[in-house]
Image (tube, rainbow, N blue to C red; front, side, top):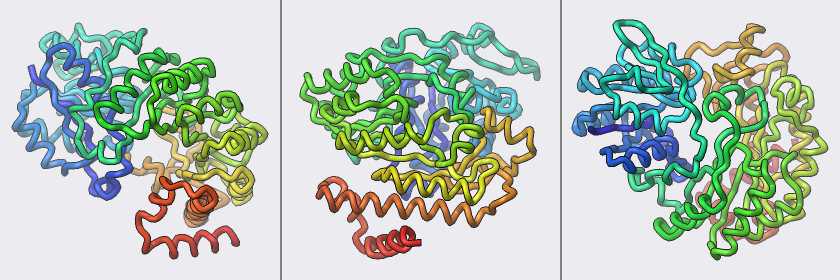
Length: 458
C-alpha cells in the first residue's frame, strides 16, 4: 500500500519568498503515523512545484491513496488538481482533508473526482483508510460517495493523548524548508476563546484545548537541535500562553537541557504577565505575537468578538518592553462597518504600544466562521470566487463609509510603521540578527526608510 500526501500551494509567488515559508505540519504528522505503522508514504509539496509537475511526480509514484489538503482559498486549485490526477490515475482513492472539508464536506465532494472528505484530525483517519480501503463504511470521520450518494460516517473522536502522536515526518519534507535553521512546532491543539474570525471552525477541527506534555515538547526541540542544527523555534499554537504553569515548565526544561535556541510564540494580551515573560526571556524567547486586531473597541469586540480591552493591550506591550521581549501586533483592517475613525483608532493605538513588528491583514470572513455568517446575513459578502478570501491582498466585504483605496492606504501606512519601528529598535539595541535581516537587501533600505518617515509624519 502506497500513500501520497499533497500540499497544493502551486503558486510562483510563494517561490519568491521561500525563506518565509512554514512546512505543512498537518501532512507531516499524518505521514509520521503512517511510517510508524510501516506504510509507505511520500509528501508532494506544491509550494516548490507547478501543478502539472506535481501530477507527473505522483503518477510515477502510483499511490493507492492520495490525500490532499484544502482550505478556502485553495478550493479551485484542489478541484483542478483532482481532475488532472484522476485523468492519469483513475484508480487512486482521492481524499481531501483540512479546514474546508471539515466545515463544508458536501461542497468538496461535489467534485466528481474527489472520493472522500476527512473531518477534523487526520492522523488516524488516514491510517484507518489504508486498512479499510475497500470498506469505507468502517472509517470514522469521513464523508464518502457510494452509488452517486454522499454517505456520512460517524464522527471520529479527537485524539485524547496527543503525546502519543509521533513527531512530524521532517525527513519527508522538502530540504528547502530547512535552509534558515528555523522550525515550526505545535505544543497544543485547540483554543478556548471565541473570536468570530476563527470559531467555530477551530473547535470542529480540534475540539477542546489539548496540550502536549512539556517533556514531550522539549524532546522534540532537542531532536530538532541535534538532527537539523535548528537555531530558532516558532510555536504555532493558537494561544501558547493560555496556561502559565505549563509554559514555565517548558521554559525550565529548555534551560535545564541547556538548549541554545531562540523561539517565538502566539499569545493573547489577557494571558500574559511579567513572571511568565521573564521565564520566556530566560529560555530564549525573542518575540511574542499578539492578536490586537483593531484599535476600536466596537470593531474588536462587537464585530470580531475578541473580548479584550485597550487597557489589556497596552499593559501586555508595556510588559514585553519591560521584560526585554520583542512584540508583534497582528492587525485586521477593513472589518464590517469599519470607518475612517475606527481605522485611525488603530493607528493611534499602534503608535502608543510601539510593537517592534506589525502585520496588517484585511479582515476576511472565511466560510464556516461566525464572522462569515454575520456578513452573509447582512449581505456584506462581495467575494465572487474562492481565491477572493485571501486575507493579505483581496477584499471580500462590502463597505459603506470607506473604500478599498483608503483601506490599502492604511495597510501600507501600518507596513511602513512596522518597518520604521523595526529599524529604530535595531539601531537602539545593535541586535546583530535584526541588522542582518534589515540589510538583506541594502539597495532598498534608503527607499524604505524615506517612505517610513514620510508615512509617520503624515
